[in-house]
Length: 412
Image 1: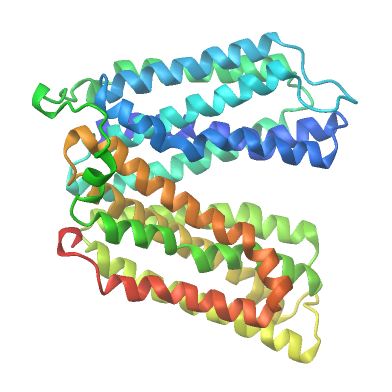
Image 2 (image 1 turned 120 degrees about the vertical axis):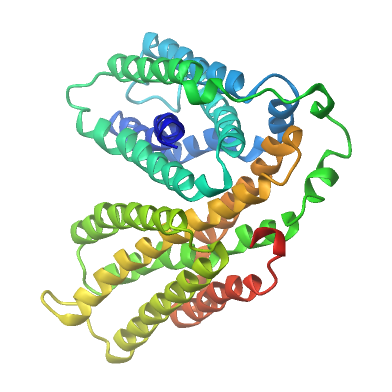
């Protein structure tokens, strides 16, 4: 199993680089060069290819091997970074990104989205059912580390790292990853699907995908399982700021502390699944714990508002509030690994010629569910008030527990 997990870890680590680059590093680079906050925010439009993965997932299924798609898309990312290294960086006072730079960054996201489809499909084909727990731990943890590396470690090197050196370093990393994808023995052993399984793109493709056993239930679950958690994780730190905790302290606990706890939770989830814990009972236990943690956060907010109190230094409530942040991220990491294992288990039930499309559908819905409440949380708390908003989030966090009772036997 190690021969499979090590190359997957390296490739998922590289897959996290574009997200960290554009969510952490690029906004600060642009702001430091005098771009307005509006222009910096508009750079998020470069993420658009990630929402269109279903458009090219059928091509990954129908034409060539997933290993070939993975190698070529990763090498292509290196080429794009090499071209970016040769361009001048955005200058101070410009109204927006130069067209060439914006076009190449869009192409970088397109290549990264294709790489994501190919790598997930390869993992679905490569991992045995007993390896799904450790495999999805590798997926979640390595991706988070890659994002942290690009958005944090490279940020620390900015004073000595020029635009050209930054993208040359990224190009070299992608080319090494492409060589790994092509040469890793475990990946070379993947058999090509027989001609009878090769299928053209048809108008009935989505119908065939949805007909895979367990797909409709899994799609509904992944769309809703993070709604309450994402809303609370977006709002709770901001409300703690309103109650007197400083921004630097929140940054430490909700940034570094949350990342460490999330990785620890993901690792524990993989370990438990590797020790033959059943997926659905594990999910049920963790979802109950997560609901209890959110209930404690809600009760804390009600208590603070009723007393009009602030979270002063050294108080028990302050410590409880900060620890609850880490606990919820720990449980969130555990839930994520278990859910991704269920998604991969469901996609393995699909015919091989549909697996990339099938998993891309589930992954897109999972991402959409996380973005939905994260984007609307501020409007909800402004419109409903914090008490009603967190009560709604509690209800949304309970919905996945009800859904588990309807899980099909194919996922047991």
